[in-house]
Amino acid sequence: MSSNPLHFLITTLTQFHDAVWKCQTATTGEERGQAQSAWNEVRKSFWPKYHRPAEAIRELADPALAWCSRKGFRGKAHTATIETAASFITQLAMRTCPCAYPEIYANKDDLWEQWHQEGEMLLAADDARRILRRLAALTGEAWQPNGQGEGDGTDRDQGGAGSGEEAARGGKKRRKCGRPTDTDPKADQRIFDAWQSGQHRTYEDLARLMGKKTREVSAAIDRHRKRLEREGK
Image (cartoon, helix red, strand yellow):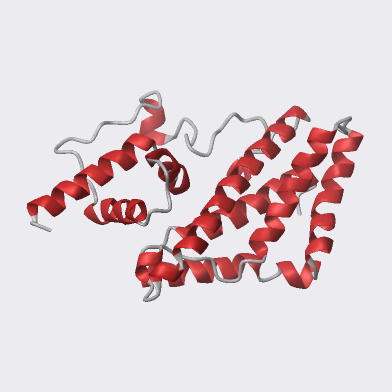
């Protein structure tokens, strides 16, 4: 366990969120099996350690609350941030078999509601993680992903300045030559099917759930419609 209980809370929420997200976005039986196995591995020691949901929330939250209190962060907003994160970890741990993309199941029509509910939970959990990271930064001990040192300024999405030949070129990546990669028709169809399910009021709602930009969702739906038109369907 991290010597900083706030960092431990962020790391745990990240592991749980990312594992369930892989289940949520699995689009084949093989991907679903791999994601489920990874999720089982992440949560296998959770309930033997914490036993009950109420106990889990307290044992996750209280060390971080005490640590922040010693740092002078005792406000209601700070307390709520920690309690919310602990609650999301516990809620995710209670999901024994997260739903993959419904189209891969024989009873897909029965699973859209569960898939959307879990998707909304993941979005809310990600927001909680973001706010928790902000709190860690405010205490003067910013959390860094992938076990990187505190305050090194490296972002998980950016991957740092790089090394070897890339560093020698000042961190600039060479552009690939040739024709750009074509779009993925299967990915477009998944977005199209999700829109056709009628569970979303706007493209923006669907984009938020699928972790994409609204214009990407719109373009994917348009591409798939044109493919259907070309095929005469």
